[in-house]
Length: 261
Image (cartoon, rainbow, N blue to C red; front, side, top):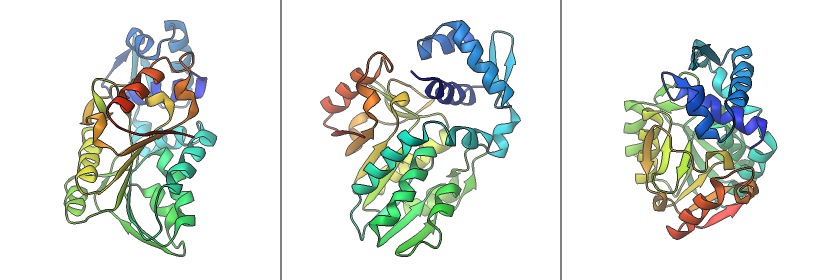
């Protein structure tokens, strides 16, 4: 796993818990405790985590959106390839629900070429990306902007989604696990994704290879709940992503077509 991949996943694991230990991070990431400590030092210098005895906790910087801003630049080339591949799967004229996340911002950039589209967005970044684009009828789902992520969540978001129907849901995800399915680090994000799944005729899940084999805090759905999964080619490399091949096999066994970008 590359450094940027590790930092991304380390930050999400810390933010998904009140406190996480160095030993737990070492086990989850498959690296030495010394490497974990170095990575935590990097994140602490960026004011994204705070080191405590034996581990780390998230800092208040996440409440100002620093978590998203820091991750946005990591693996941007990979995420742009994923965004282009997903957008190419969306038929012009569709009603699309676009999830929150750093990868789906890249999807939004490429969706403009698939116009005309009606696109409902679950993040402030995607809304800014698609605003005023010719041929894009933009709907911003109501709700509360979740601190650190700028994803739209809560009862208002859920009620809005329950009143709409979509041809396609582009779902980003925190973790894809062979036994435990799709999962998210936040209960609120998980609830919104469950509503999106229920209101959409088709769901395309998208995530980079660092999410494979990860079991985040809140389960969203079994692997077979989506219609296709788009990830990067690194997912097939067991040396850089030890859980990748096993998770891809589980997805295919569940009847989910896997597309590599």
